[in-house]
Length: 209
Ligand code: FDM
Ligand code: MG
Image (cartoon, rainbow, N blue to C red; front, side):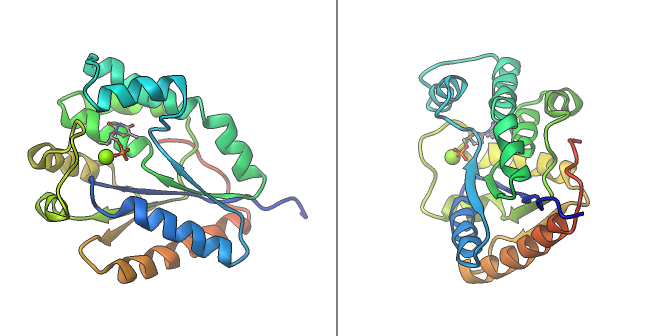
């Protein structure tokens, strides 16, 4: 074959304060130290025009209809799609802090129909691996408390956790987020390396859902 081997799309998901951001950063450094091409990504990407609208919604500077904001979160992924696919095809592994699963879980937790929430994400690149950092909402909240952003509330996070459970699929690995940072890190690394090897072995890039 001889073509360039693609990178893996690895997504970390979980409730707020489940440890996603620190584990993403740690995984990217680990992969880079192994000599692999790897980049840290996150959604929402607040640097774009759509991302600016999302950021002001999340800080409650603005109000938006639940459906409208759902579509903006999705648009924020679609506007990065070409770049994301280009990176993967060039051989770079992307470690992404939240993706379409957060999009669906947070909106469905507000009461929007699950299938309606999934529809705009249809056709986006499917993660090769979703690492779900599983943590009870109470434990997450006790970790230094939440900030002041919208959704940072135990009652709401419990609803989000129920929606995440409905999205679990065969490309998910559920990791116990109550383990120590080092223990979670070890499990995350093991699954990530295995996913990268499968992609280098020619695994096709699939589409949601
Ligand atoms: N969030 C995140 C959504 O509601 N929909 C989405 O599609 C995404 C990606 O935005 F409360 C929510 C989840 C979280 C908030 O995310 C901001 P960060 O990771 O805390 O910046
Ligand atoms: Mg947050």
